[in-house]
Image 1 (cartoon, helix red, strand yellow):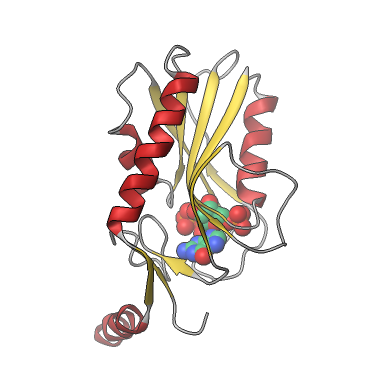
Image 2 (cartoon, protein in one colour; image 1 turned 180 degrees about the vertical axis):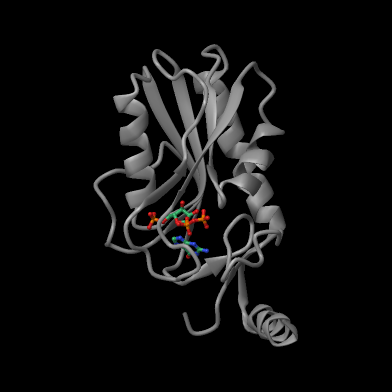
Length: 183
Ligand SMILES: O=P(O)(O)OC[C@H]1O[C@H](OP(=O)(O)OP(=O)(O)O)[C@H](O)[C@@H]1O
Ligand SMILES: Nc1nc2[nH]cnc2c(=O)[nH]1
């Protein structure tokens, strides 16, 4: 365990902080304004995509002051790895979805397979509209054929952690977004 903690400290020390807490805050403020304009009268069902969506969802929710409901899905494509594989669903929402306006919140839009599959599932359950929001969009050309309705910031194509995103399970708690040295 001591070795693991020391390794993680080295990863953090050697990382590059690409986006700081203030930049995230102002991106969230802008997203919340747009979301309020679009959804304030729709009593949306906000869906947190666990685990990475936990911190972003909480940060977004405290900026939304209209009636909404909250639920979550737990789906993972990366697990403890830095390369994604097939999406594993670990938990489905309990709230009735048909005829609801749904807003899915996640930390990152990377290749987009996770968000695309989750949106498709909600559409199949009869949601009236499915919107999606991510804090960061990674810039590369390996994407699915869709983009989130709301995105905070674009970021370079490196392995990221912080503000919900993990490095081998750690660092979801960081206020900024960091990139692993050399990745
Ligand atoms: O756009 P994609 O290439 O599909 O990747 C994005 C997804 O990857 C991460 O989840 P992960 O599978 O690591 O699970 P986690 O949320 O528990 O970290 C992240 O939280 C997104 O849900
Ligand atoms: N932690 C983390 N999860 C991801 N899922 C997809 N891309 C990333 C990334 O860069 N970092």
